Amino acid sequence: MRTSEQQQVPEDLVAQAADVLRGRRIAVLTGAGISTDSGIPAYRGAGARTRGTPMTIQTYLADESARRRYWVGGHLGWRAFTSTEPNGGHLALAAMERAGAVTGVVTQNVDGLHLRAGSTRVVEIHGTMRRVLCLDCGQVFDRRDVAARLEELNPWITVPESIVLNPDGDVSPESTAGFVIPPCTVCGGMLKPDVVFFGEYVPADRFRATESLLRGSDALLVAGTSLAVNSGVRVIERARRRGIPLVIVNREPTRADAWADVVVPGGTTEVLGGLARMLGAGALRPLT
Figure (tube, rainbow, N blue to C red):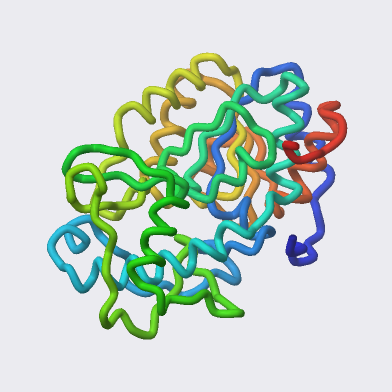
């Protein structure tokens, strides 16, 4: 696990946040910033990596060469992506759930680290890298099975000793010449990772699950997101309609700071760990 950059944690603000949240059922919204201490870079904020042009669903569907580039880079990055481990921020939220303080987590991340940390009620609003879908027949596959088929079809592909991850868990491939994308084994159709591409709508059932979580909560804790993506803003808007307290933890300013009861400008590992201790969540431990 990679340690976070040293940053002075504003203990008075953490204490204020704990006072707001204490005794409440807390729903949590997280973004890329909670996973940076696990070695997965964020899109935005200090130290964020410059991104290339993101893959859109329109390009993916229409351009075979773009699909090949996506799958080569996505496969190499996925191999490295799956070696990352939950950090203290993930563990703190799981501990708060075990203690009965957190009702669940809505995450914009596709890395699966909340589940691996031990959180049990997780809404992966942008999907997950663990699954692959057939766009023609709807069959769902385990990413590991698709990866094995991909390597059988492309035996030349190897995982470099040192891979620099992009925020979506991919890398920039040097070449896609001769690369074969595995087809669906049920209908021969086009496969796509179960993640929401740019230009694609978030499935309605994920918003319904999010709304259900908010209805069962009386506070919202936002951690590690600047709320630049509309799906996160929609969660904030629903919390505001209910009039429940809002606490934000993020290194950089967010679009919702003006609405928050408390804003803690700090790293999620340190601040969420502090909140867990103040709320009596007990030991931080991964799921075993």
